[in-house]
Structures are given as structure tokens and as C-alpha cells.
Length: 488
Image 1 (cartoon, rainbow, N blue to C red):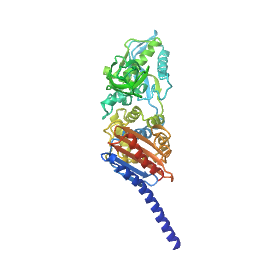
Image 2 (spheres, helix red, strand yellow):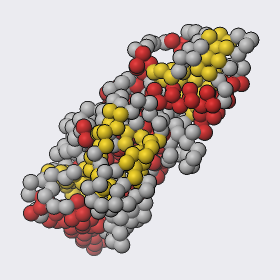
Image 3 (cartoon, rainbow, N blue to C red):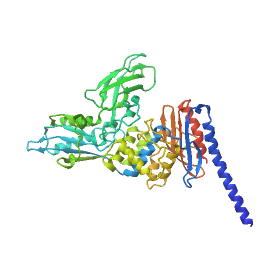
């Protein structure tokens, strides 16, 4: 009887401790949600104990909101699960026609895109070596004895479609580097770099010195001025495939060479152009020059299975490496390409729409998609609607996956790495919060895992949309919740 009473007391004290700790987290989120700055804001929060699945605390957990880059958690998890951590996208080189004894190819060279977003990427190649793959391609063609190509070098990214950008992206984003849309052929991160010389006084005109790469027939309307500012305060405007680019804003005074990053208008044609130039440099002439499947309206199916000869396959980086870079640096293009690759591998259709369809199909077997709206893979679209409960469901599913350790390793650590290296710095959450961040105008979000001081493994998500104070002030209030979870 005495033992029974002791067990009852122990159970009561354990339960009381749990409730108290639980109330501490709930109190923290309630206090944050009741802040005057958030009177007009939408807030969705949930934290769950991964060992038991029990909810620790919540605030509007089922409220679906646009949550910016935390949406990349879905893209990277889906790619790792569906494609596999070791999957490597490929770009393939074909030729049609015949080569005579004089070295004349009566036909064309075709570059068939497979969504390799690492081709010539600055993230995977040292400075000055982004073009090295072109040397290999040209050498491969030369070794076939080819000296003259009577036709063209064709870029073919048709298997990913030509939508340009996903639904819900703003016009003000598309011309900038972070607004580079997904494509069957990617090149140099689908980035176009502009180099400017600025003036010595506020309002002075800037001068465009050069671009990398060189884009044929580019028309640049420069309205960027010089000003007493720090860093890049300019914007580039221009839609996919459009060779007219407009700019405004300001750049720092007295800059001899200041780089501004924009989006590459047409990666498909650009790659064909780059290879044509490389072939010319090694003495191989291309009579009809560079062309693209989109421009020539040559969207045909199964041509590579009949009379086209595969002469080279260029493998990109592993999905695990791409996913790590996606989450650590929050790179829009990589997240979008991962979504497209899912659709491409499963159906042969690399469009964003098909990729999202296959992602929903995969995860719907593991948790409810009710109220979940994914319109892109990066979170740049304000048409996305994702609740804290959706994030926690995904994170819980990944905690049970055989790929959990790979996925976990792709995420930044608070106070230590990636986009949250400044989050919870010198606070209880430092080193314990492992999460993806999201930031857009009037939107701030975090979602991921917390290894609490007590040893508990927690999944959490917190999104605040349409707040009235600064982003920094909002983060400070969110940190209080995360720090409370870290000592839970």
C-alpha cells in the first residue's frame, strides 16, 4: 500500500512538472501573440514532442499562411525521399546526322536538359572554373573528328516546360537573382551579373560596364543612380525570356566596379550559345549558330529514342548536397528545381505543377493535406498557404524516415550556421534550434527541430504574417518562444 501511494505521488509530481513546463511554452506563445505589434497579424504556431506525438503548445496551429522560405522544407524533404540522397540530375549531349571523312557533321548537336541546377554554379565551382564543363564538352565533340557542323547547337529544356516562373511570383522579383525561375536547362545559377561604375555625387548616373555571361541582343534600360548608401539598393525588372531589362534604385558612390545580380533571361539559348562559342574557339565551326527548342518551336517527343546518338552525359551534384545548400543559404532556384526534378523522374514531366502534384501525392499518404496549398517550391509565392501543423506533420514524418539524418544535416543551426547563424545567439536556443527560416515583406517564420535541455526532441513551426513592427523586433519576440522550448 505504501509503495502504491509513493507511485501515485511520483506520477502526480511528474504530471505536474510536465504541465508546468507545458504551460511555460504556452504562456510564452500567448504573451507573444498578445503583443500590440501583432494585433493585425496572422500567427500560426505548434510544437510537438516527437517521442510521443503529443502537442506541447499551440496558437492557431491550423491557420494556413504564406510563410516564405520555410516552404523549402517541403522541397528538400520531398527530393531526398522521392529522388534519393544520391540522385544526380544529368545534362546529355546528342548529335543527329552523319560525320564524313573530312570531319563534317551534316546535322546538329543537341543539349538535352535534365534539370541540373549545378551546371556552372558558383556554389559548386571555384571562381574562374564555372566554364570548365564547356571545355570537356568541346573536347568530346572534337575527339569524334568533327571540324564543321552544318547545322546548329540546340538547347533543349522542353521537358521542364516554359512557364518561366511558378504561380504567384511578383513582377518585382523576376528580374532579380532570387527570382530566377526553374528550367530544364540551368546555367551559372540562372544568374546574370551586371557590373557598374558609379558617380561621385548623389543622383549621378551609373554606367554599365559589362555583364556575365554576355547575353546576345540584351537591351538594358539603366535608371540606377549613385547615392550615399551602403550596399546594393537597386532592382532589376524583366520577365522570363524577355531581353529587355529595366533597372532602378541606387548604388554606393565612387565604385569602380560594383556587381548587381539579376536573373538570366533564357538559360536554354544561353547554354547553346556558350557551347557554340567554345567550339569556335577550338576551331570547330557551327554554320547555323546557336538555337533553342523554344525559339524554334521544336517541342517534339521521343526524338532522342530514334535517330539521335548520345555522345556525352554530364552528371550534376548529389541531391543531398543540393538540399544542404538550399536550406543553408535559402537559394530559390535550387528549391524550385528540386520540385521539378520530382515530377520529371516520376512522370517525365518536369513542370512545377507536376512536381507539386507528385509531392502532394507522396505526403498525403502520411498526413493530411487539408488546407495546405503549395504553389511553388521556394516560398517566394505569396499564394502558398502552410500552417504550423502542416510543418510539424512533415517534420515528424521525416523524423521517422530512414533519411532523417541526411535531412537533419541540411538544416542551419541557431547561432552557428546558415541563415539562422544570428538567431538565439548567446541564448538558450543557440545550438539547440535546428531550423529553416523564412523572410519576406511583413512575413517571418521558422520551422524545424529543437533538442531541448531536458533531452526532448521537439518539432516546431512559427509563422507571423502582416506584423506592424520591424523584422528585427519581430525576431526578438519569436526568440523568446524558441528559447522557452530549448529549456523545456
